[in-house]
Length: 259
Image 1 (cartoon, rainbow, N blue to C red):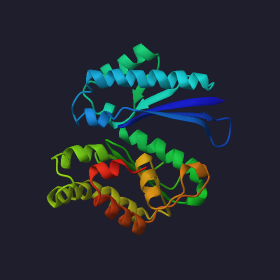
Image 2: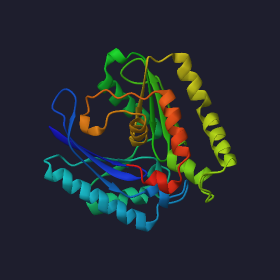
Image 3: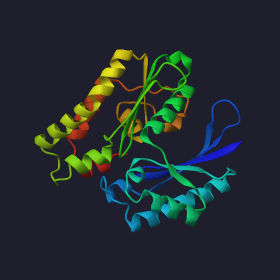
C-alpha cells in the first residue's frame, strides 16, 4: 500500500509518500513548499488571508503530487502555528473546501505521542527506556516511555520561531546579552519540570526529531541525508555546545547562507 502524509509546519508544507506494505514504511518521494507561516503569524494572532491563500496552493500541489506517485489521498495535519490561531476553524474549512484535502490539527500532547510511537517503531526495543525531543517553530514536544507508547508527554511553547518573535525581534544583530539571558531564563523555567521527570526516569536512549535537530546534527558532523535513512546518526552535547558557539558568532544574514 502506498500512502502519503502532508505536514503543515511553521515554515514549510512537507509531503511524504511511502510504501507501507508491512514492516517499516519506506519513503519513495518527498517534497516541500516554503510558506514561512511563523514569520506572518505572531503567537495568538489569526492567520492572515494572504497566508491562507498560500497554504491552499501548497496543499493542493501536495495532493496532486501524491496522486502522481500513486498514493491515496493524503493524511494532512497542521501543527502549532495553525493550531494556536484563533481563526483555525476557518483556515481548516477553507483548505478542505478548495483542495478536497481534510486538514486537521493535533493537540500538542497527541503530536508528542505519535512522534514517540514512530521513534519507538524505528529504534526498536533494544533502545530501552526512550526520551523524545521534537522541536518545531511553535512548540517543543517532550515524551518518555518504556513501552510502545509514552508514559509521560508534554507540549511546551518553546518553538524556535515563537522564541525568536518573543525575545529576539528587537532588531539587534546579534542579539544583546540581555535578550539572550531572558530567553534562556524562559527556556529553563518551561523545561524544569519535564527535565526533572526525564532525569528521574533514567532513559537509555534519547531521540531528537524534526528538521531543526537534523540541521543541528549535520553541524555536529552527522552524515548527510544522501547516505540513506538507515545510517546511524548521533549528536553529542559537547559537539552541540561548539556548534551553538559558532552559530551565535554569525549574523542572521550569515546564518541564512549556511547550506
